[in-house]
Length: 398
Image 1 (cartoon, rainbow, N blue to C red):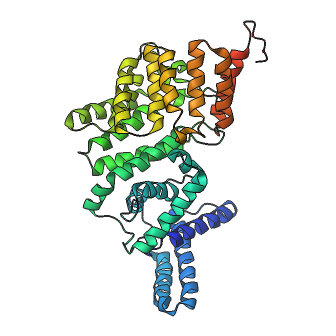
Image 2: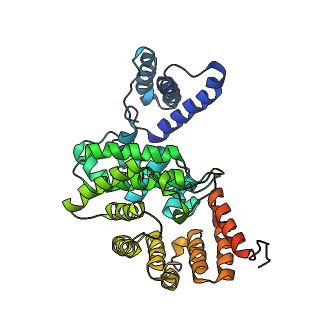
Image 3: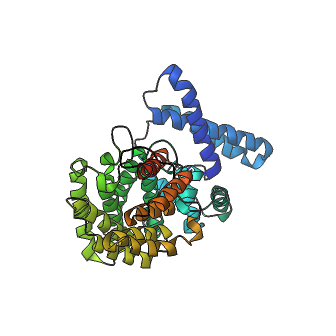
């Protein structure tokens, strides 16, 4: 994209190179330098594309020839080990785009998320997100602003969008929106790696430190989130001895360094909540009143209904399920949560704590019907089945 300034054509060329690799590598073996192989094929694809365009548009003939020469000269060029991923994230957070469009485009082009996964993160229909991404590409093409690596000042201006992109990539990796697995380790690790890189570029930014701390503190629990059968294990039942202590120590250290240095942002608050969970010796020892206070602060900063959903859970754990259900009634009216399974799942959990088994079972089933993640769905159905069983363990019809 730096060379040709054409987002759509570059994306197509990379996809063609990936398809060629999928066909050839199983037969011929993986090349010694896979990155160089993919780049070479993508460059040749771009050259073919520009040659075709130049046949229809004479004025582009010189560009096509230059592209062909570039592709041919790449044969003898040494392979680059430079990691352009973070640079591409900054590039996609283009000044011609609104923050929401820039983040959506980046998640699609760099994060590798599907349109459905991005729509899930933004709480909008998939068709709406597809249109948003398509318009974003068109806006860049028509803006006249070069699609190039931003300088230091531009990086600072785009930093908040970049952090949000990494946050959403990590979230999708930590709990996959659809599919058989609960999480995707590759996405979570990549988000952490890129957050570390941003931290090196912006060592004084407290929200960058807060985001990295949040990722480390949350990911520290990953190995305890499922059992040997791949089934979801809720936080209160997890074996805390399996949590990664070195990540917890690093996350707490980052947070402790960032909090006194300036204004506190949402990533630092979320990291503080994660730290309270991680530092508690058991579920019973968790400081729920403090967690609720932090969610109260976070709710004042953000219009995200998921924050208020977590606020209701914290209120229930701190002051009883009736208080949580009261808050939940106000959250569930938000239209952005209409197709989300989380409202039903939280309501089911709180109703179970409140002793209303029949309504809890109904909401567990409703949540399972809306969940696209198989591990979550199976867990919700299992909770419903347990509540439906009589004291002897026999299934009851509810």
